[in-house]
Amino acid sequence: MAFRAEKTTFLVLSIVCAAAAETIEFSVRHDHAFRDRPGILRIRDDGMAYAETAKKGKSDHDWFWGWEDIQQLVVAEDELRVLTYRDSKWRLGADRAYTFRAANGQSFRDAYVFLRERLDQRLVAALADETVRPIWQLPVKLLGRLWGSEGFLLVGEDRIVYRTSKPGRSRTWRDADIANISSTGPFELTITTFERSRFHYGNWKAFHFQLRQPLDELRYRELWRRLHQGAGPR
Image 1 (cartoon, rainbow, N blue to C red):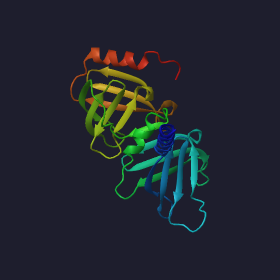
Image 2 (cartoon, rainbow, N blue to C red):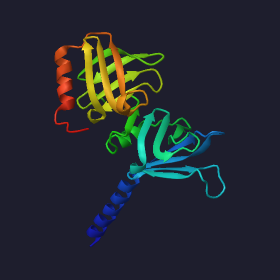
Image 3 (cartoon, helix red, strand yellow):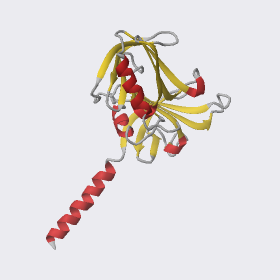
């Protein structure tokens, strides 16, 4: 009986620990029109919750979003942006977005690790996945509307990473996050993703890279086949 009781206690503790591990939280500041508001952002299996800490009683700045309430979630090292389906009355019906900045020296990298296996193409990883093991890589320049950034393009087994020292310009794309790749020559590569953009057709965002070394045609074809193999309608 004692052995059974010990097993039961261990099982209960394991379940409690597993449940606790399904929530991570961050001290943040919420960008607001008039002043930043300190609070706690909690990311759970079923969505995200924000609660103000400097308040008296219930605040109208406490929110919860289930994953079905989120159009896009952008995770950078020190910033997290939630784009919802709600209209913004101050922006003529544009979709309302909420921006949170990490406080107390924290980073949202743990949020990316938590979400990369839980959230679909709505997750935009505006950081470089440090765990990727590149099959091959190239030094590149990412072109921008006003200015570009320099870094490396790393092709892993199931994701592509653009790593640069410019804040907010790095990206990690899982294969499912990529709509297409194209090239006009050995020194150019375009990656079209499901990240939302107001400046590209169909709201898909294209990343145009100048390659500082030529891209082998065989590598390009293998990557193209991998991204399209078994891909149904997107």
